[in-house]
Image (cartoon, rainbow, N blue to C red; front, side, top):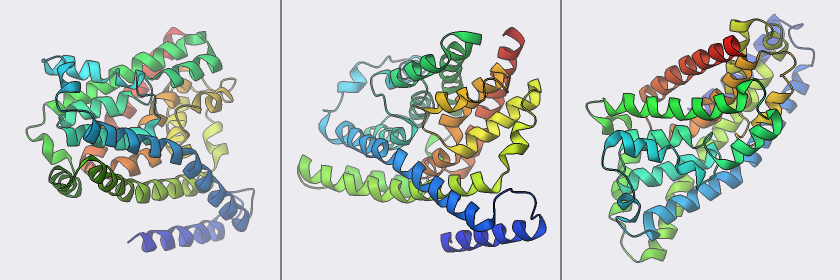
Length: 321
């Protein structure tokens, strides 16, 4: 299947080059080389955080005794989700590493809505992202505050929405449920289980990371960036353009504020906030990683909620700034 996808992308490049040769300033070989470079850079940038997320996932599943984490959690469902939204403050891993860590929470027994709340909030509500966003923008135009509060609110909204689902386990893929069964019944001591779980997580996450990185590189060379920048001054269209750009470029949430800073003189403050909200949550790389655990229908719902919420928050920032 993926060979077919790759061939389709190559055919698409040639078709675009043939039908619209003036659409891109660079030649097809140059764009192909740029796409490969971008894909490798996204992969290299993400790999350390994915490895750290896998290690933390194994620590949670194998080495933390049963009941230790749960003992500190509130009993009410909404309060548990609210606390899990802040877990990123003590687990400062970017969005790539949060996926394997969230898988560990699911295997430990946390519910799907609770895990989704952590997964959506953690890429934004963590100290590294807060510091880098402050370093880039300070408190100007309320961008920092809107990003933190917006990310926290979106995460809890998604957690609440999916807590209303009649069968939360149906939000997970069959393959992940089978993996949970294998992990629960894995024989041997802790070191044997650690090694087995390390292999399981890498086999699940690495193909998705490579595919997501390749898609991020391909999309960046297939979509003319000038078309996005041309609408930067319009209050509504600028938000849409920056949300689209956020899904395409797939920059780590730890450093995306400095990338967004280069657009601050052209785009509205609300569009910058929308970029900083959408990118860590539903870019193509993140969606590929989340697909290892959640169904396409679940991901579609998450994307819709994130995009609509980010647009509303960006519009409010434009009106207040």
